[in-house]
Image (cartoon, rainbow, N blue to C red; front, side):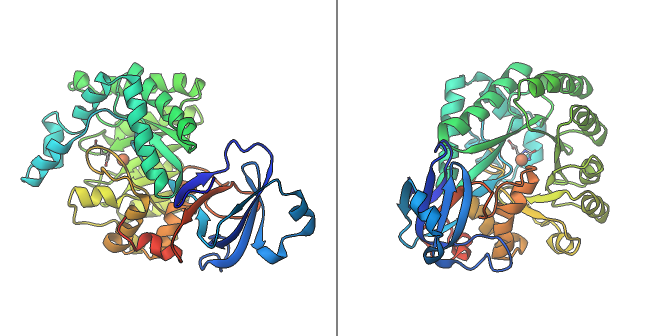
Amino acid sequence: MIPATGGFTNMGAGDSLTAWRHGRITTLHGPDGWDPKEAWSVLTRGEIIVWLGPDHQLPKELRHAIEFEHNLAGKLLTPGLIDCHTHLVYGGKRDAEFEMRLSGVGYEEIARAGGGIRSTVAATRAASRADLLGKACQRARRLQNTGVTTIEIKSGYGLDYDTETVCLEVARQVGNECGLSVVTTCLSAHTVPSEFSDNADAYVDLVCDWLPHWKAQGLIDAVDAFCDTVGFSLEQTRRVFESAVRLGLPIKCHAEQLSLQGGAALAASYGALSCDHLEYLDDVGIAAMRASGTVAVLLPGAYYTLKQTTPPPVAKLRQAGIRVAVATDHNPGSSPLLSLPLAGNMACTLFGLTPQEAWAGMTTNAAAALGLTDRGRLQPGLRAHFACWELEHPREVVYWLN
Ligand code: DI6
Ligand code: FE
C-alpha cells in the first residue's frame, strides 16, 4: 500500500515481485541522484530493490514476472528517511519544565534540582508496559508520516535493570507494530539515578554488568553514554565504552552538547559509529572523529529548544570530510519534535547545511551512524524502504515547515 505521503517499507511482503510504476524518483545514488527522474519505476522482490529505471526500459522478462503493481501516479518517491537518534520510549511529559525554562530557569539547573531527565525516569518507572508501548507507537507513527522508515530508539529513562529491559523490549515491539525498522541503543548511562546520587561510580559498575545480559537477549545493537556535567564524566564514560567494546558492541556518544568534555575524542578512540550534538566540539575532537570515520549527528531540535547559541562547527566538519547526519533527538525534555523533515529544515536554517546535505544527513549518513549500509539510497540490492511525497522536488521536504 502506498500512503498519500510518508514512509513505507515492503517488509513482510514475502518474496513476490512488485512494481512501483510511474513515479518521480530521487535515488540519492550517484552524482545525478538528487533531481527527480520522471516516469521511472522500481521493482522489488520482498524487501529488496531488484531494478529501477525509466518505465519504458523495464526489461521484458521482469515485466512478465510482476505479481503486484502499484501506480505512483507521478508522486515523488525517495529513500525512506532514517531517524538515527531518538529517545522514543518514556512515560509522562515535561510541559511544566518548558514553562519554567521560558521563565529563565536553566536546563542544567533543573536537572541538578532533580527535575529534567530524572523526572521522566520517575514517570517511566511508574508507567505500565502497555502505556509505554502505546505512546511510543503513537510517536513512531508520527515520525513515519514524515517519511521515516528506520528509527534508532535509545533506552535511558528507566535507569534500573528491570525498567531499562522493558524499555528495550518495547522499542523492539514498536518496530513490529508499526512496520518500521528499529535499531536499539542502550543509554543506561544517560544520567545518574537519584538513588545513586552520592555514588555515580557504583551506578556505572551496574550498567557495565547489565550490558552482557541485554546483548545475550539480543536487545541492544549499540551502547551510548551522555558525557557531560549533568551526565557522566570522561572516566565514567570510558568504563561504559570499555565494557561495550569487550562485548563487540558499537559505540555512540552524546558529546559536547552543553560544554566541552572531550567525549567526542574519547568515543572516536573506540571507533564510535557516531558522536551526537557536538555544539562545543573542538579541533582535537574533529581530528579524532575524522581519523576513526565517526559520523557527526546534528540535533537542531535540542539546540532550538534549549535556545543554545553556539552551533556545531559545520564548516570544519565539512572541511575534515566528516559525514554529517541529522536526527530529531525526540525526547520529552530538550527536543519534543516528531518531524524529521523539520529537523532537516532546522539543520539548514540554524546550522547552515545545504538541502542536499540535510538529505544525506537523514538518509545515507544516518544509516552510517547506525552502522547500516543496506539503505539510504534507492539502488538494486538495497532495501525497499521508501518515502512518498506529494511534492515535486526533495528540496521541498526541508523547505516546508512541517
Ligand atoms: N541530551 C539530550 O538532548 C537528551 N539526552 C541527552 O543526553 C535530553 C534528555 C532529556 O532532557 O530528557
Ligand atoms: Fe539525545
